[in-house]
Image (tube, rainbow, N blue to C red; front, side, top):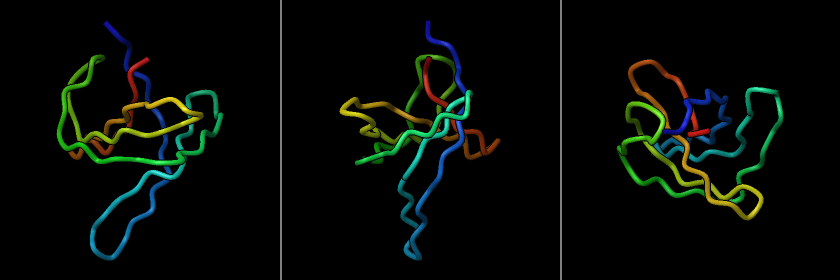
Length: 78
């Protein structure tokens, strides 16, 4: 089982309601630029729970990030 890793996400929010992750900031403060992202809807995370999921390309790797609409928390599986 993966571990829950809270992150901070910088979003582009458009007037149409579309959200696009631009940066992921890790636990240690490291910033990762998101070069591409795809919203895939509500998904279960490997670490715990479920949330709205985006597949993000960071340094040629695809990383799923999750957002809980109830708590406002962003996380990745570690």
